[in-house]
Length: 252
Image (cartoon, rainbow, N blue to C red):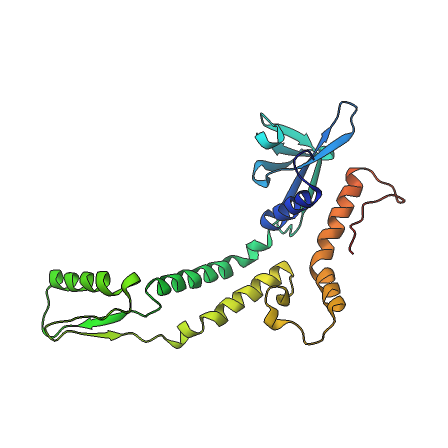
């Protein structure tokens, strides 16, 4: 199209498919009826509809990027619809992220907890012990004074406690110490849902045999091939290419 390079176009195609489960591409024609541009639409602005007699249309809401000033109904012949994981309806794909929800929440919680820990100077919390009875206002004052003077940017400074008070740090538990292992597990689960070999995101787990060609062939057959074949087939059908003419990616 007029504002994307070939690389940007296919990147946008795959980003939409992997993040939403659907890629909607609108054909733009010249006055002679020939397709001159292909525009990857925002999947959040497109909804497929099926008529009573089985015809498929796509409702496209206004989108200034593609010159759509008002909502339009586009027939299926003017739309390329790439989708996968169609669990609930053949026209509604699902992103692999759908299967990563709990894992992503776990990873986010781990990293948030880690960030809060290191904001405190990488030191665990603790308990201030004061002999005798302390009223609520005094306890709040002692805690506030300690937090302001010896936590965050001031962590590690020498503390001063009076009246027999003492501070006891809470040691890091074995569960906290396994945070890295937990994060590795979330990475493995997410890689499995996208069919990406784990060694592509973690060099420590690279297979022992030293054969780059075999590794790349495995990556292609397990992860990339289904997407590449899908794009090639959809473009063949979009332009009514015959058996002797077709779209092929240069895998080299």
